[in-house]
Every structure is written in structure tokens, then in C-alpha cells.
Length: 290
Image (cartoon, rainbow, N blue to C red; front, side):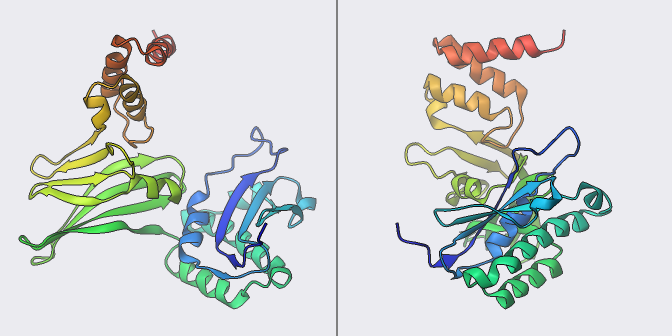
């Protein structure tokens, strides 16, 4: 196997012995994803990804767990008491950003990583408030009205929030509409979700997902200030797609929680004899407090 010549990825995982009953480790994916987006390819000897394995055992700190297929996995001690002293969201995110920096610098000489480059990226991220807050994907222009639209992504310790942002170039007015929220962070998921953004009409904005067949999409009706998630295969009567759409409205791939729509589409699927939908409806009914 050819060894990677460049470094560019950051990941984190949990030690097998991590005791969640003692401490709570927040979802810190936003910090790792932000660093990965800001960090570009840099020369490396054999490693393309640095993965921190969070552990409660201080004696494991910065020891290698495994080096395999271009991924260096290193233990990082999660000092819960020190994290508890972090009063602000900024301090909490910097706590984890500093973990990454420490591991990177510790192994920089061994793998030929550029310490000055990392420090420049680190300083830029800190100066920006450690905020993953940026446009994502293409710009959709309505050149006749001089209006442009983008998808905007905001990540934080609480998860991800996606918005449509419409700017009137002539007046400078900006309109924002949140259309999806997720727990957790994942830029790969974003790349799947955020396909092409287009103006369907002067008052309808459509964002397609990256699907090869009948792509799903969000549609923003600007006149009524309403966003709807559509799955064409489900709307065309496909039972499996109806089941998927029902699950999506429970906070899945649509990023929208709408119990009424979830039940509607699951019932549509179950009515066609789709057993997974019928079983899921039964589970929902049994778990509902009486």
C-alpha cells in the first residue's frame, strides 16, 4: 500500500474504558471539523490523519494506540475537573483545540509536520472565536432581481444549524431562515446534504441533496416564509421511500423534527404492507406515555 504523502485530517474517538457514568464528554466534533476545514494539505511522512482517543487514564496521555493505514491514533487525557472549570463556550472549545495542538506538536518531528503552519492556523481559529460559521456550497443568483442566496452552516458544541441566507445586493438587506438542525457534527454529511442550490422561481429557493436518482430537496417558499423537505420517490408512492421520509421527520436526514408528518408517512408506508414501517409505528405507540 502506498503511504500518504500529505496530512490533512483530524478525528476523535473514545477509549474503551471511558466511564460515561463518571463524566460527560460533550460532542466536540465542531472543533475537529473546523480545524480540518481551515487546515489544508501539508507534507507528512506516512500519516494523513491524526485521531485523538479520549481517555480518563492520565498515564496514557500522548501514547500511541495504533498507527494503521495512514491514521495515527493517540491517547489524550480528558481531565474532567479542568474541563469543568471552563466557564464559557469559547473556553470549552479551546480546551479541545489545545488537545489537538499538543498531540500535533508532540509528533511533528517524527512525521515531518510543519509546526509553524499549524500555529498559524491555530491562531487564526482562536482569533475567530473558534466558530464554525460559514457559507457552504454554491451561490444561487437571481440576476434579474439582483438577489443571491447561500446555505450557511453554524456548528457548536450543541450541534449543527443550517440556514438559507438571501441577500438583496441593491439594498443590502439580508434574510435568514433556519431549515435544519442536527445533534453532532460531520462535514461529510454536509457534503451529502448540500448539493445544488437553485432558484426554482423568483419566490422559491430549492436545495438538492447529492443523490443520483430523484434527489431529495428542501424548498423555501419566501412568500409564506415556509421550508418543506421533499422526497420525490415517497411522494410518488414508493413504500420504502415513505418509510425513510417518516424516519427523516423524526430528526434524521431532514434535520427537522415533525411528529405529525413522521406518523403520516409511516402510515402511508405501512398501508402498502411495508413491514418495517408497521413495526416502527408499533414501537412508537408502545413508547408513548399513556
